[in-house]
Image (cartoon, rainbow, N blue to C red):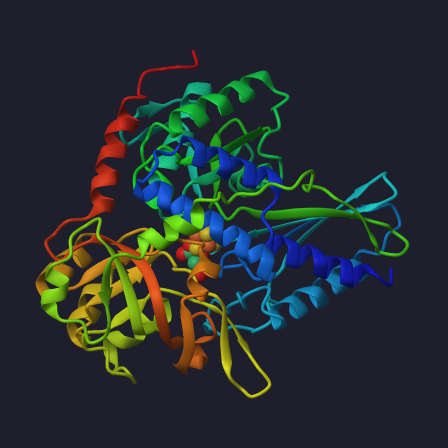
Length: 509
Ligand SMILES: O=C(O)C[C@H](O)C(=O)O
Ligand code: SF4
C-alpha cells in the first residue's frame, strides 16, 4: 500500500478545504429562499465567497478543523495497524502544512500536542466488510457545533413544547427543540444527525453516523422519512436564520436513524453540524492504496453568484473603527450597524480570558478590539507568522469573564459569533463597548483582511489560544449587541421560542 499515506493526506486536504456538492446544493437552495438584502442573505453571500476561496486557496474553510473522525471499512485480511499508522502520519503532515489546526489539547494540563495526535485523537473506527476495496470516510466537525449537540431522555418536559412521550411525537418535539437551543451558536444554518434509541454512547454515535448520509437521500423507513421532511419544513419556520440573525434558512439537512434500546431507556441524541459541514470519503485499492473513487463528489456545484463580489463591496460602506476607539464612537452605534475595523486587533479566547482576570495584559487594550478567534497559523522560513484561516469562535464561553475584562482593560469592541448573555450586555452599556458578530466559519474571508501579524503572546497556551496581535484592513462585522442594552440575540431567541411553542400540538399520532 505504498500510496496509502498520500491518499489519506488528499482526503484530509479535500475535506478541510472543499465542501462536498450535496452540502453546497443545500446552501445554494437556502440562498434562493432568503429575502434579498437582509443580514441573513448578506451572511450567506459571505459564506459562499468563503467556500470558494477555501477551494481556490486550498486552505481550511473554517479555522476550527474539528475532531478528525475516520470511518474505515477494510476487506478481510487487510492490515488495520498499517492503515492507522498512515492516518497518523497524514494527519501530522496536514497539520504541519496548515490544512488542519492543531486541535488536540491535553484535558488536564491544557497543553496542545501541536500535531493533532494524542490521547484519543484522531478518532478512527474500523469495520470489516466483504468488498475488495478499502473505504475511508472522514468528518471534520468543529467544537462550536459539537457544543450544541444535545441528548434527551424520554419522557421529559420540553420548554415551550410540553410533555414529550416515548413515541414519534415525543421524538419530534426533541428534534425541534434541539434546533431552537442551538440558535446561531453552531454557525447556523446547520445540519442535524439524529439517533433514536441505543444507550447514551451509541445514541450519540448513531446521530453522528447520520451525518455521513447524503443530504438529499431518502430515508428507507417511511416514518423516519416523514419525520425528516416535517422537521425540515418546521425548523425553517423558527426564524433563527443564518448565524442567528433571523431569516428563512435555519436548517439545511435532517437525517434520522433508529436503533434498539433498553426497556428503561429512551434517548434521542442530536449531532448538530454547522454549515461548514466538512465530510468526504474515498475508496482505495487495497493493494496499492491508490484512490479509486470519491464518495461524495458527484458533480461540481458553484455556490457564488455574479452579485456576491458587489454585495461584499456594499457591506463595506460603513462606520470605520480604529484603535483607540472613543466612547462617543461606540455610543453612536446601534444593533444592525455594520462596522469595519482597520488597524490593530488582538485575538483572545478561553485561556486568555481566564488568565486576564487575575493578571496584566502584555499590550495596551485601552480603546481596543478583542477578537474571539483561534486561527490557523503557519511560520515561514524567516520565522514570520502568516494567517491561514481566522474566523470567529463562539463567544458565549467568555460570558463569565467578558464584562470584567472590558472594564479592567478599557476594551471598546469585542468580536465573535453567536452573541453573549445578560452580564456582557450590561457591561457593554456600563462601560461603553459593543459586541460585533462576524460570520462564523468564514475563515478565508477574514484571513484575507489580516494584513500583518505584528506579534504573539502566550504561545504556551497553544496556537489557537495564544494572543495574536493582528493588523487588519476592512474587517467587517455587524453590531448585534450595542451600548444601549439592545441585543439581536436576545430578540431572536425570544421570537424563535414563541414560534417553537406554536408546534406544541401533536402531529404524529
Ligand atoms: O474553535 C474555533 O475556532 C471555533 C469553534 O468551532 C466554534 O464554533 O466556536
Ligand atoms: S466556527 Fe462555526 S463553522 Fe467553524 S467549526 Fe465552529 S461551528 Fe463550525
